[in-house]
Length: 104
Image 1 (cartoon, helix red, strand yellow):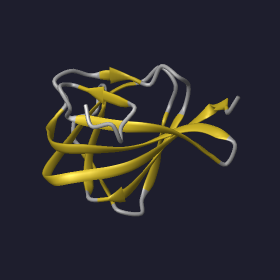
Image 2 (cartoon, helix red, strand yellow):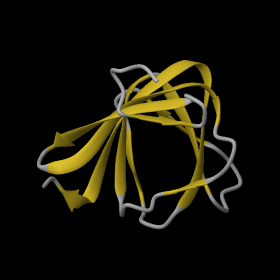
Image 3 (cartoon, helix red, strand yellow):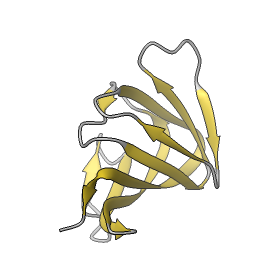
C-alpha cells in the first residue's frame, strides 16, 4: 500500500486516507478504473460523497440503471444501503463525509 493512503480496498482498487471535514469524520480517496467485485454497505451511517475529479457510476441495490456522478457533484448514501461503484475511464477522486460520525 502506498504510504500516502491509510486504507486499501479490493486489492488497491480503492485507496483512501482518513481526515476531518466540517467537524465530521471523513475520507479522501481514489478509485481506479474498474468495478467493485461485490456490493458494499454504507454501515457507518449516512455518507455524503462528493466527486472531486473524474466520473463515478453509482448503483444502489434494486436500481435498474447506473447513475452518473461527475466532478463537483455530490450525493448521499443512506445508512445501511448496499451499492456498487464503477469507474470506466482513468480514475475518480472523492470525499466521503460520514454525516452521523462527529470527529473525536
